[in-house]
Image (cartoon, rainbow, N blue to C red; front, side, top):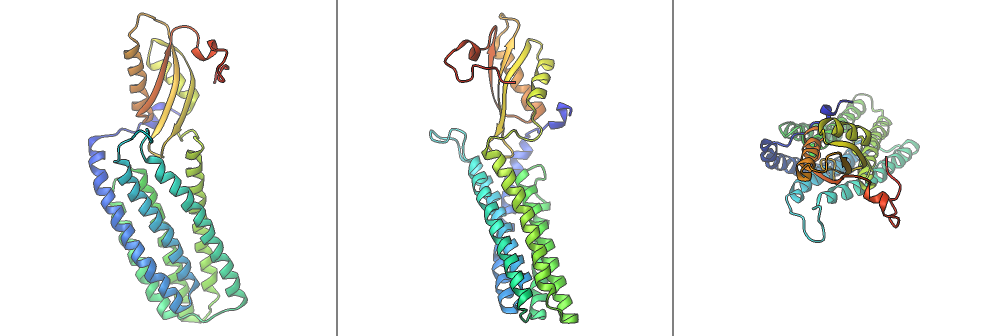
Length: 314
């Protein structure tokens, strides 16, 4: 993959747009949260498991939107002595816990659906229909709000995906209500509730996978140590070897790279070479925080017999 394919420029317009995106996500979270309570109540009144399942899905969407909003708020807080990298990891930690909660909610829906199959209960199709229709309208409003946000921001894109999943859940509940009203066949309710549970499981798997990857200091998507080393050597002529390349991220939007670079000309200004390497990483890979250790002869880690990193990393 060509290095230029990973360009992630951070413009002033992007930073100014963060405030508008924060307000839109906050409003979408508020609308979703209020209707989630109404939909859960409607599910209890009508006896519809599909509505209760969809309200559970809306709970996860509300949590995801709230996390996105908190992410914008906390990202503005400056680093301090105890958190030198700032507060970006807060959102990752809560997202991981939220993903585990999603699994629990989906499991409860499936267990309840099995009970409904074994012992069918009456469902008020009319109440179910109007509550599901209102839910669809609320999700369309929330989706419209997020569509007007900054599409380059990962928080906005992830929040929009949450709402799309909830749109499908509302459609499923609406379809179940129509089937019950027209045929009286109530098993459609637990069947479609299981489909909603599968949607929740899909979201949960992605959230846990992505958050876990970040918490385990996994290499961000699009960053390859070998490719980074090759591109730096090609871009900065004084550099003839790059090793000890490590890449991880504080959040999905803040990748970090550390590396050793051996330069051939001891007379060159090291500050200029380090600056050129950092500029290359920022322009081609979107890495705004990089630590570069310059070497003129042997790697310092190789010369220190007490170092645990005495072998050279690829």
